[in-house]
Each structure stands twice: as C-alpha cells, then as structure tokens.
Length: 105
Image 1 (cartoon, rainbow, N blue to C red):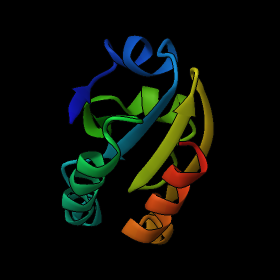
Image 2: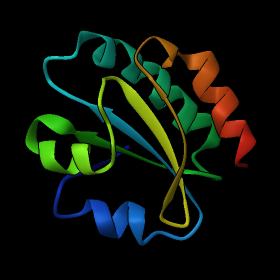
Image 3: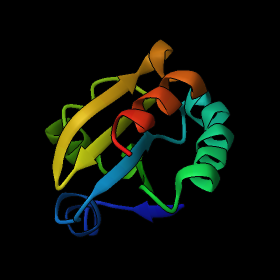
Image 4: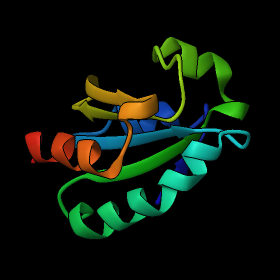
C-alpha cells in the first residue's frame, strides 16, 4: 500500500486517472490501526482495479482538513481526482468499505 504525504498526495490522488482509495489514519487512532489489515486484504482483492494509498494525518493536518476529513478513520474514494464517496468513524468497517469499492469498479 502506497504511503502518501502532503508532498505526494496531489500527484498520487488528485492528478491520478481512475479510482483511488485513500485510507486517512493517524498514529494515535486505535480504530485506524485495527482497520489497516482489512484495508490491506481488500487491496489484495481489488488492487488490480483500484489504486490504494494511505495518508497519516498526523503529519498532514492541513491537507486532511482541506479534504474535509473531520474524523478518523476515514476511507475515501476518489475518481479522476474528485472525492466521490467516503465512510468514516463507526461506518468504516470492512463490509461498508467493500460495498463502496464495488460501486466504483
């Protein structure tokens, strides 16, 4: 899973053709860490159809706010550079993330 930061986010997500899933997480977010293995498994399943990246918001607070990420964990789908869907906090679970992925592949 490609780790992006404030310097590479635009290039890897906003300027990317096709569908990109972004896992917004932080070091202090235990639910984020618990969800990470599920995201990695989904990347194994769908990584040939969707690009998977993760952004540690601890080092990119302004970017997270600019992307309207107000709670963690947040899993967002971008299509051709536009955010088209997201799940956040309690709704961010494997089932809802997989359902969201299936809407865009």
